[in-house]
Image (cartoon, rainbow over all chains, first blue to last red; front, side):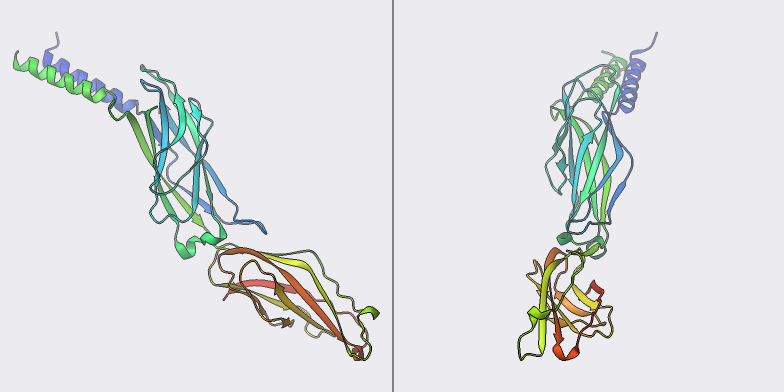
Length: 154
Length: 165
């Protein structure tokens, strides 16, 4: 018969282990750099798209949504994000990522599922763009965004 | 309640608190990613409108005047540059033309036109102050021949260059 002391410890460890193995949201893909290098005559520089990032997330006990925000002091160029190939929930329109912005919806209406929710995935499509007036990174430096994804109750 | 029971209750409560969703903030979790955006120096310049032919004919002759001129402004120069302090120069490939060919940038959307130039093989300023801009201008060519020079044909290949001002 297990003692109350060991029972309590066991419950604590099981809960911590379960929590670590079932992270509500993870970003896969590592750091990415989008490089704008070309333009067509008479047009602004050609935007660059990157789809190398995947969000892994789980349903929660309530209907949830995933939001996105960024920190990029001294931001010079434009960056947008949207969720594509979303396995759960509804993708929101593309979000323009600007330094200091409030969190904006990226995926909405993720159904609730309190017990053993499977991992769901969505691809993040980043689009970087600039204008000739905004200059170039050789003269002005590059933008470095710390993009934060959060899953919250809707 | 024994010390062991108290310990069990405390650790169980801690476990429940650890596992419980943070209902008050309604935040379940999050993650971050670093995204860089780099923009290379980009410059494009192009001529729209195709080849230009300046034909001096009888209609351009004024009795008693040696010089005969004809003008064309059917072509446009379109540029874009994201570098600062830039200008556009123009030059011709024809080292020894029979006739004079002059050029000026008309109605630029950005920048300041240089003075009308007599085209030569050395680059001359067509448009100044076009750094970090997307713009266009009309190319106004003026061909001049003297009656005393007789007849002939000049073929120019004109090169426009965006360069540091």
